[in-house]
Amino acid sequence: MKREAQLLTGVVVGGMAWVAAAADRPPAAARASARVVAYYFHRTIRCETCLRIEKQAHEVITNRFAFEVAAERLAFRAVNYEQPENAHFQEDYELGGPSLVLVRQKGGKDVERKVLGQTWDFAHIPPKLDLYIEEETRKFLEGDKLPAGNGPVNTNSTTSGQGAQSGIGKALGSFAGLDAVTNEMNAIFVFVPARDEAPTAAALAAIDGAKKRLEARFEIKIGLFTLTPGSRDYGEVAAKMAGPGVVTIMKSGMRRLVSGELTEEKVVNGFMTAMGAGGCCPLGYPRETR
Image (cartoon, rainbow, N blue to C red; front, side):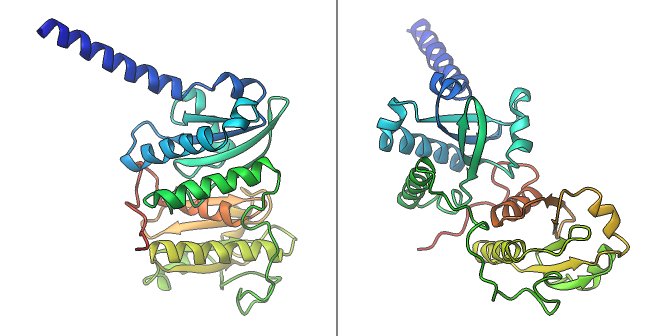
C-alpha cells in the first residue's frame, strides 16, 4: 500500500510539472500561423489571484472562441517572463506586472498589441472578468480596437493654469522641490516635455486620465507636475527619453520613467511597475464594488 501511494504521488507531481512546462510552451498554432495570441504573462512565484486570472482567461479563449482557435486565428499562451528565455517580453511589451496582452501577428512578427489593463480590476468579480476578456478579444480579432489614451480627446479637460500647450499640474524646477509639497500625496506624476516640442492634447489627457483612474481604483491622491524645460534636472531626464515622458514617483522613493507616445495605459503601467517592484500582488486585492 505504501509503495502504491509513493507511485501515485510521483504520477501526480510529475503530471503537475508537465502541465506547468506545457503552459509556458507556445502551442503549435501560436508558433506558426495564429493571427492573434492572447498572452498571460506571470512571475515565477504566484498568488491565487494570478492563477485564477490565467485559468479564466484560458477558459474564455478556448470556450467562447472555439471556432477561431480551431481555425488558428486565435491562441492562448501563458508565459513566465522571469525565465531567461522570456525576459525580453517585459521590455518589449512594457509589462508592469502580471498582465493579459492581445498581440496581432503577421508573418511571425508582432504588428499590434493591447494590454487589457482592467484585468486585475475585475479579478474578484468573475462574470465581469469573463465579459471584459471576451469583449476586448472580439474587438481585437475584428480589428476594431480603440486603446485607452488613443481615442477622441476632450480638450476641455482640466490640465493646469499653464495652458494646454505647456504642461499639466504645477511647474517644477527640480525634483528636490517636491519634498516641500508632497506630504499628503501617495504618488506623483511628473510630466517631462520633449525638447523643442509642444505637448499634444492627447498626451496630457492620457496623464490626467491615468491619474483619475488610479485614484478611483486605489483611493489615493496623485500629484501632477511639469518639469520645466531648461530647469536643473530637465536635461538629465530628457536625455533618457524618446519623445515626451512621465516620471512616476512613489512615496517610498521608487521611480519609473515611461516615454514616447503617451497613452493612458502606458502611464498606468508605469505606476504599477513603480508600485509593484517585487511580489505578485504588491497592492493586495483591488477594492471590489459590492
